[in-house]
Image (cartoon, rainbow, N blue to C red; front, side, top):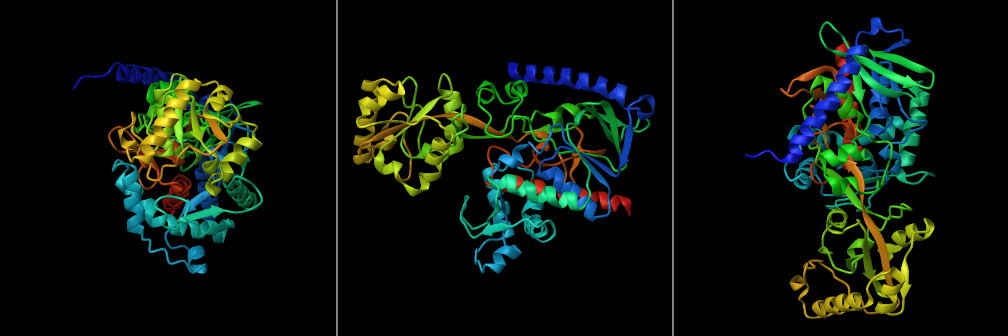
Length: 494
């Protein structure tokens, strides 16, 4: 099998970065050789996302003393940008509402494996499916998270969704507020503006024992008797890494979530040669990059055209695939969704239109298709031709014969004025790749052995997701694995 040029570049650049961080580690690993102030805890957690703070709360409940190091001045990862829903099969909250979901752990497992194209690690996937209910019950009973249950929010529409409720929006911000309040109640120290620049190890055996941190006052060292947990997220905001791992189209996507998720889990663990997997995989979705407006449902309701006034994708694809195609198949990662008044008034699109209005994102409107094209800067003749061809194909049942075909299950005509053109881009949500972990959250090396003292959780870890994921599974899995890490560390103390 031939090695591609991208693979060669990717390998050499990663090796260069790993070497650089290895040098940093060598200068920092012998704690007694530095003059940096030292503080010792049972475990050191790098990153204040849901995975990190759940690990800390569970560890404190287990009688351990954790510390959380966060490079920003507040919780700024993807959790606070998320919709805030999690997944359960038969939780106390579902039972209290009398829901008869017909769901099972096995169905949950099968669905997760299906969307990962069978590439998700079976053991990790099984752990999430089996422990999801226990984890959500714990979040509700012990942490105090409030959920609204019963809605069929995500595929496969089995009422698994548990939407975090409260005063703050989106739900992920409210979820983090519940967690922060519990951490405060438990007196868990959270050190803000503390950027981890190197991991510390025991020079005698190579075990990871802490982290070297750059603060506004200088360098500090945090030692963990049981090790270090990487909870820093993926690398969705690191364009260099995206270009190397996922390609130029992915790197050119505006970020849909946090701009602070920059790949520390891969870069800082490099000296220990973890088995890094699925770095070419990511989740994306539509967005109006300059304002952040979200046309999540609009993009599957009409005709998608490029700035060159050409259809470029099958509008029957998922919003994830639509986002990928917009980034990869248009010259500048811009598409326009063309719809009519009847489609505009669909109740399911209400939130999308509000998003554009509240964020002052442009939506072009006109009483004719030619007028709409002029408003949006498109070619009037070409747009009229495309709309007419689409309407005729729809009427005659020949949408599949268009180029590209339209396979939408419920296609809608574009007939009733006024007409609308909604500009959008493919946007980067989160990356799926990172150091492979086992069901205890331990990072595995290239030989498949646990690296002692090194753990990862959430999108800082790899192995669970590939190609796509069931909505809500990321917050759920981060919580499940965070609890597993804390319980494993508790067992080590006994």
